Amino acid sequence: MTIEVYKMLESECKLKRAPVPYDVKGDEERTFIFHSEDAFTNPDKLLVLMHGSGYVKAGQWSRRLIINDSLKSGSQIPFIQEAQKEGYGVVVTNTNDNHHHELGLVRGSEHPEAHILHVWKHYIYPAKAKHIAFIVHSNGGRLVSLLEVAIEVVCTNIDNNLLLGSGPGASTYWPDAELSGTQFEIESGAQFENAYPQVEEQFNGRVFAVAMTDSNHYFERHARYVGLQKVVAGQ
Image (cartoon, rainbow, N blue to C red; front, side, top):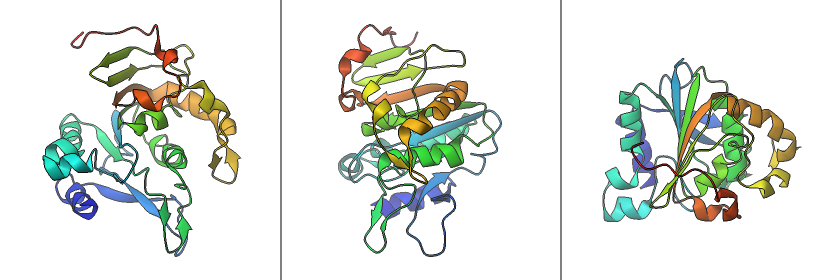
């Protein structure tokens, strides 16, 4: 299934692969992300898609839905195609591809947290787009919260869907404060707490929306969302 979805991302969505780590050396273990031709040159807007935890890989939301229902409901392909119609560049992350038996852990993708921070630093943030949006599922919501660290939040929680909006000049908001002190090994031994201020500033300046589905249970302290403004769909 994974290989077939990869082929469709390339054939139907015309996506290309970019290596992780970005500076892969020789025969070292590696993974990749998918991106549209204009993902890093589109001056206007970029959409980043991120799946949840488990066995899903790039381009998949749910293996069960793909098997029991259809690619339309279980893959990211319809989202990618619609985004391209709307003029977005597209990046598809691959956060669960962390370890290959031959050579061990993938540098820059040792675990999902390292993957998203590596991809942000070397691919997403350097892109030309002024406006960046995320669509994420399940554990992807927790991962994007590593980047979404200092924003004014407008929260919609309808049928387990969490929609977060942000913009430049927004006030400080940290949805999962415990993560701010977590020791993640990220690139050259740097710890996440050292990377935090820079990522905070970068995220605040350009990310205008994050849409999460079925992500609430991945945040350790739900009480941090109490009191956020709930917006009726369509407003």
